Length: 140
Image (cartoon, rainbow, N blue to C red):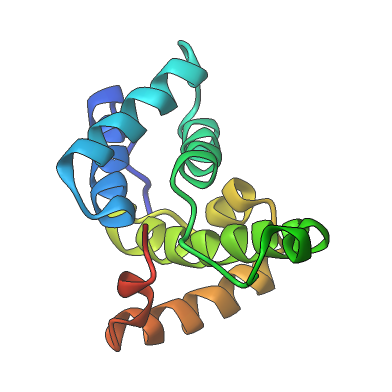
């Protein structure tokens, strides 16, 4: 199978589409794309841009997750909350990269920094959640 090389505009369109799906509104999507390209600079490969997009999304928007009753109890669980934010964002991003951008499982694994088998499990779980609309409701 031959792979079509994407132009910079194709990649920008893909990132904007991903941002729309991830954030749920036009204003936040534009901000996320702006941040991605601000941090990325020039002459980045698609995989690097997507990795920067992922980092910007989790840093800026993440997933709304509240587990603690008061701030004193939350101090020790910050890493757990951050891990859950990253995990849910990675599942959602993996599905969207596969379905919208048509990126291979191996490239997705490179973007999220996880083993190929983990990405395949996330895709299975994420598609089920998206089909039942659970993951979309959990977005920022």
